[in-house]
Length: 219
View 1: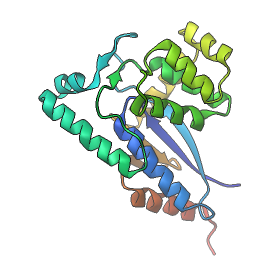
View 2: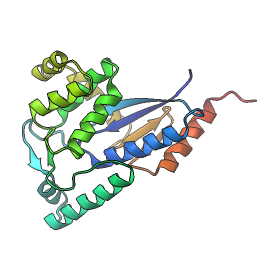
View 3: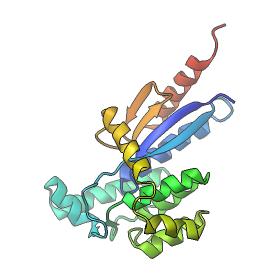
View 4: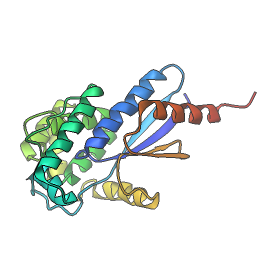
């Protein structure tokens, strides 16, 4: 069946990616039976220079990064929590942490190869934004990945070999750079339309319908 292909560049540590994907999913669900959509998740690191194993609390990290007070950073987290809740998502507004996501992206490429891309992305998002246990701890990563359907031996093999899927992640990031994407989420719809940010569901639906209509033969 012919489909509209959507490439989505995201990072597990990005709250706007979490919210934006939920809005996009609602658009797809609303077009069920009318527009067929194929999603391909792509890797993008918001903090690629962060050392592996370096984990910080989110609020002071955000305060330092953007030059705002801890109170302002916490207020931003509360606002993000409200937006996430409006999309039916759980969001822990206090006590979250932040770390290097490169290994998570490598595992997401493993998930893609195993036909479990959507399941593992969803599991990692939930683990990062809703669960109390940190997704930046090896044992927790393995636990979440296996619960999402991956084989534990495969997960451990990827984590133990830093070269496994490295080039796949870097290729995604290079393509994003070539397209001019400097932030995420970044959606490319049918290789024609670029959409940046966590846009409203209605906008996603409009562009998906437009791309679908343009694929149909003229009467």
